[in-house]
Every structure is written in structure tokens, then in C-alpha cells.
Image (cartoon, rainbow, N blue to C red; front, side, top):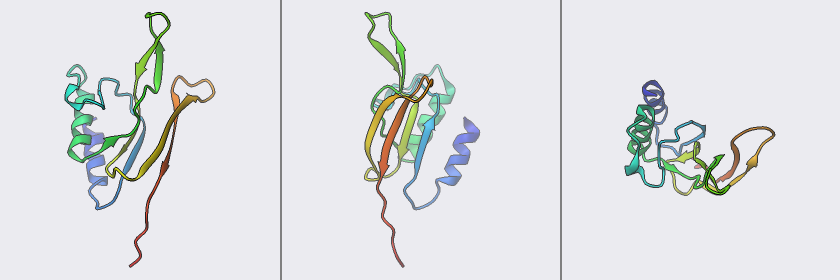
Length: 119
């Protein structure tokens, strides 16, 4: 994770809007309360620090990898499929849908809005 964060910092060192998305398998990060990073997972801490330092916001606001709970069939799970962006106006219409085929992850659909600047 240290190498990934270092690489992403180099790639993100531009004056542009950046989107990072995918299955990062970091279930110990509470993206909606970043002060509650679990210290049990060093990878989660390193990635959360990277995202916070570069101003990335997580746009997926629900569970993307459900797991049955022993709590009367109520589903629990993790938000491990991420859509991070450093531009709050770029990501729109996030939708978490049923898993594709036999995947154990929900599909995540979203729209990008971007503008080109002509010089």
C-alpha cells in the first residue's frame, strides 16, 4: 500500500480532476467518518491518509459487498468498491445495483461530468 500510495501521489500531482475507482478491499475505512479509521489494518490507514491528503472524496455511500448477518437476515457488509474524486462536481448519479453474474460485489454505476477548456 505504501508503494501504491506513492505511485498515486506522483500520478495525481497535476492540476486536473482525478477519479480513482475500483475494488480496493479496504473494509476498515469508514469513508463517512474518516476519523474512525481502524488501526488494525495498516493498509487502510495508509490509503485513508493518502486520500485525505490529496482531497479525495468517496462517492459510494452504501455497502458494495454484502454479507448475510446473523441478525434476522438483515444484510451487513463493507463499502470496498470505491469511486474517489478530488472534484466534487465531477461524479453524478451514483447507483449501487445487484452483483453482475456470480460476483460477490455489487455493481456501481456513475456518470462523469467534465468540461474541456480550449486554448
